[in-house]
Image 1 (cartoon, one colour):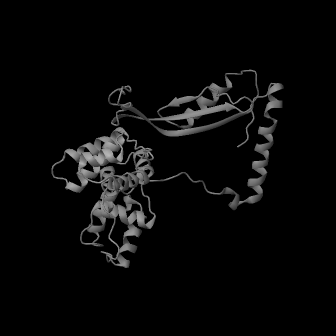
Image 2 (cartoon, one colour):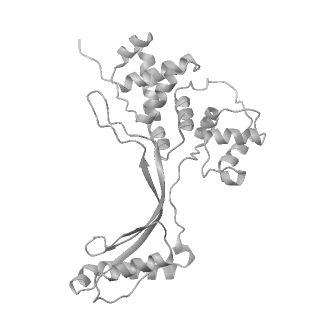
Image 3 (tube, helix red, strand yellow):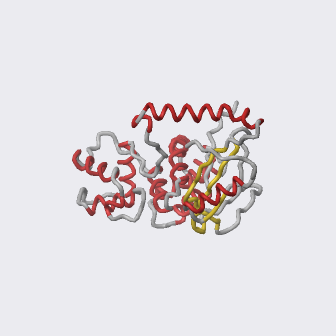
Length: 298
């Protein structure tokens, strides 16, 4: 008899594995949550669906269904962990993944007006609600909904389902830049053309002894240190990386590079980025070629 296809493997980060293990050990958790957490842990340990079903006294179809559910949610869990979501909120997210879907035909718990109000709060700045956080979490939103009497009671897990249904992801953000071209197209195009021409000419200028240097800065870089050293991989165990860290303030990086060669020139890393810091950095850069001349293009 030919063996069937092998199930897709599950990979867990140390933090997610730790949360699942806590779910299994906590005797106050409901039975269904403990069993499903065990399913994921066994799957991550390399057991196939039949082996897991025998260990948990269930059928392999059930294991396959929850394996697929976890794999589908894996990117969302990775994103949440990547933005350093607090452990308690990550646990709520994991619990929502392991929870049953709402049954078909079940009426909504809340009215449309309540959903609109919840979305409005989720899309607002938490600091406008006297919350000392930069981004909403399901737990904070649940508390705010009840505080504003939008709903009488709602769990963080239910808030997570509402956010997912509405396509809202408060834990995510990306950088965005105003389109300066819309303000003055002629001036923008002229400036962009000048810079492009300068970059194109950089290799030729370099042969004539002229440096084309691009300068930029990155402020607010967090100086983080893991509380404990990473434990190396061993037989049957992946590398263990400590998720807790200590903060050592922030640093500002001022760096530039030679356009013709792409090589960095005298980067500066300091606790502050003031005008004096920038002037000192420029002087430090000029000192690499004391016989050169200076001109600038913004």
